[in-house]
Length: 390
Ligand code: FE2
Image (cartoon, rainbow, N blue to C red; front, side, top):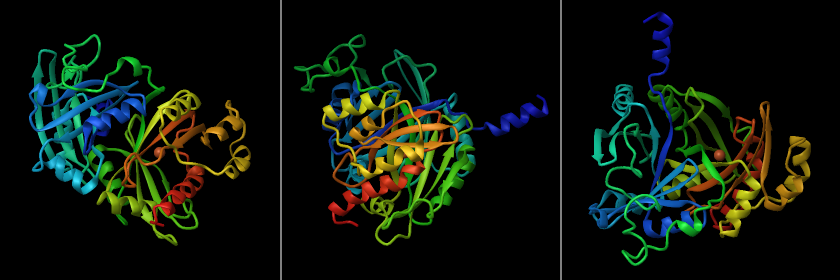
């Protein structure tokens, strides 16, 4: 092993193959699954619960493109999921990452100071073996490392497939009371993959978590914005973006900054009850088509003032899309030195002003729409004011 190889090994102590899944712990997984399926175009592909031998919870796996969400709720009061839900409401529990070796990833992470949540384990069924382990990150959020190289089943052992070609259709209507499944809705809305997942942390804690992702994951800070740049009349925040070496996994971390009124990050932290995942950005290669389809399904997006579009063209310049169409759908546009991007944000996905989604279409741009932050924040603050929290 030569010196160069050693150095490469040392740099890549935590190889990440991609996003595995995001698990949301919710109050009513049956209804949450219906939302992701009907409002956001996901297909339910697998299920685990009492009917499959899991006694304490129900989990629905929802997929679209490469995006995989799992919504889970507990069935009894004395359960960690019930307590998590009482504290946080519906939201992200687990940002799970696919790795080539979950035991190794776990050992590297714990040896660098990460807190263990689940020691390495292997689960097996007729489809093969999945190796998993988990560590804690900000708030009550965790990262599960998943090695599914030797697994061909629907999701994990314990889950039954709900796909047409998979397993017995025992969970179709009439055999357990599920709402009708994938078939008529399986077209999706064109969401292809997770682009990034943003964490909101408490005042003064951003650098702690930046350092955590540097130390535990070997990530680097690829971008940062001070409160000078991201400031509206009322609200301010600071943000740093952490990325793995391959640029597949991107974790922007926000913290509130002093503004005239309450920062939206502070509002999140107050209503979530600590640090947690703020938004999941989902990529599309046709954002206009995706947003049209989502709106048709009833998903609500943040509004953007028409005045935003007065200066957008001057700021961003020539793009393939028609500015009038972007304005019609209130899609935001931004440019960096590598290209441009289009993005739009949904309203929060639950009554607490916590988790929401972003749809993003990248045309070369590698940043996150910083030029839009002010326009976005002003839009968010109008919502915040309506809730009486500004
Ligand atoms: Fe984002």
